Image (tube, rainbow, N blue to C red; front, side, top):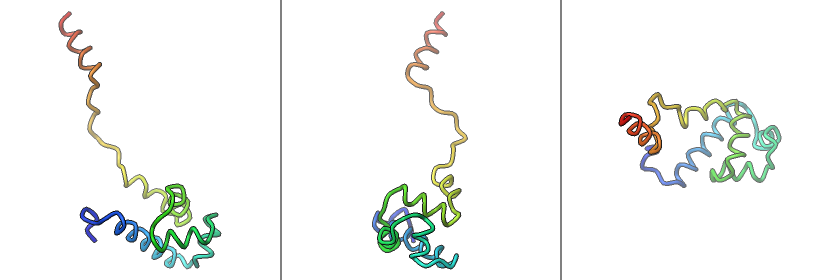
Length: 98
């Protein structure tokens, strides 16, 4: 799947299918996964069926699947230095003029 051109709904379905596949790989039933995660079974089924749910529930599921460290891959820290603020730029010009 090309995630760059996928709709939000397609990406939700993709995530739901990956969660389901990982659950099955680990040998959990939906009920077992919901119980282990502390999520209501109905909520867990909805997440796995449609990919809709809260960020909190996604975190709980990732933790249960022992995939919580994957979150770091979503927004890696940039090696570039941050751009100076307007105040910092004005201050630098003022300091140079002294």
